[in-house]
Image: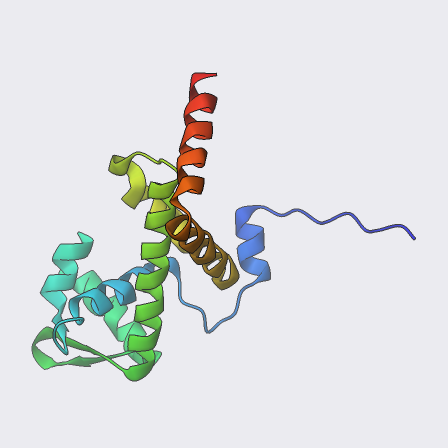
Length: 162
């Protein structure tokens, strides 16, 4: 029996295939993740704090926060206060975890420290939950068996020299 060849798509094509109208855009994810980071030690953050952290103008933050509020992920209050809903906190926690896992993975495989954040930002919005979980397992393996990490680094060095 002949097996069908897999169909290939552009990155945008794969994105459209998996499109779910309830999904956040990459920009929305960045805002929610940063909001979550700011609310780890207090219950709210401010529009001005988000604007400074994300290097955008306060009106842009206000517009995005209003969109996130319509999705029941944040509550936007007078004087620029942003409070995560339970749903927003849960999703924000996942987004931060995903970011951290990718950063750790890139560091593990020897990506230069100066570009890890940029690479993480490029990857994190297009990686599936299952892939993140698999990377977490791999990171755990290397933590439990550091000799495997040493072997990986030796192989990497040999490849770079060869």
